[in-house]
Length: 111
Length: 225
Length: 109
Figure 1 (cartoon, rainbow over the protein chains, first blue to last red):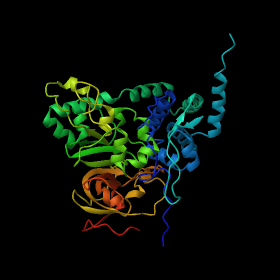
Figure 2: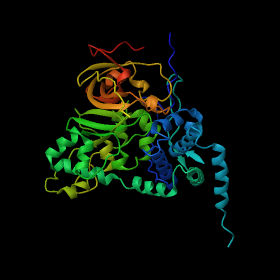
Figure 3: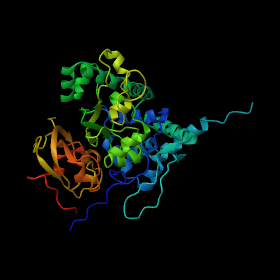
Figure 4: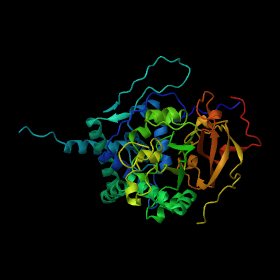
């Protein structure tokens, strides 16, 4: 007898849920940047990250990480994971760069 | 840091069925700053490796910012005033949009028409598929777990939460946008709009009416039909 | 390089089909709530590369026919209280469908 794989934690059509939060959130610049990067990585000149590869990425995070992260943070993390898996960069390299980026965001000096 | 938007429902159910406790995960200022920094770090690495350039990203951001509800409203208003256009649009949404100079980037646009006896509602249960190339970004609630879980199971209750009550005898058809098609609801043209021209009609057509959680606006005020 | 081949289109509008519960893991686009349910094909959408393959970087194909299939809400949810004519339409890839001769739903698994 075959045992079918456990359905993904994203496959929630029909699950019981509470009221819908009618919240309207602005689209942040970094979120647009994430979407733009993904579009370019998947375009005809590169084809290094398709939408389905990205989706597999966040569907494979594990339920905890999936539920903890916001929609675009999931995509950003999945992009890094998948690009690393494909040998195009390493997460360590991105983290080193992040340290550099953070150093540029200096706290304002006291007036 | 991400936080969960407040929600209210009791947790007194039995353990036997799936129950989603989370509301929508929302970034606060710290979370948005972290997101920006991490996105900048990724961009810097990709640029240094020659995989893409910051200039390309800037242009692509402009591309994805450009579409919005106004494009969908243009399509719907034309369908309301021109019956042959409406039929062509229902036959092939991508071609119908192209007739108005609107480029649909997705594989195909399926336009689903509301009638006095049928109301359409669109959802993507698996993620967030939405006709972004014409309507722009979906609202946060569209990608929330509660909407995705409940719209396919209890659409009338979901519509009631949005303040929509359908006349008795109206069937609901839910479209789960789970693969390559994208969906646009063609809302009912409100009554008393015969004298309005196409441009004026566009102002009645809201994003929510093209997703299916609302009717188009009534002509003289902002109350839905 | 020649165009990707496509699998044959097996169904047209009106065909009664049942959604299979295939033991495929990974990135799939057939939600669990329609597995084992019977519905009617309303539209052939065209042939597309299989997302199960695309998700692992395999773009070799073949392209798979995609159909919009309509289900009665009362066949999906036993407790459905709405209109009898309430329905749900969803896109299903060809390999997830089996031809049926009658619309009668199988017993719940």
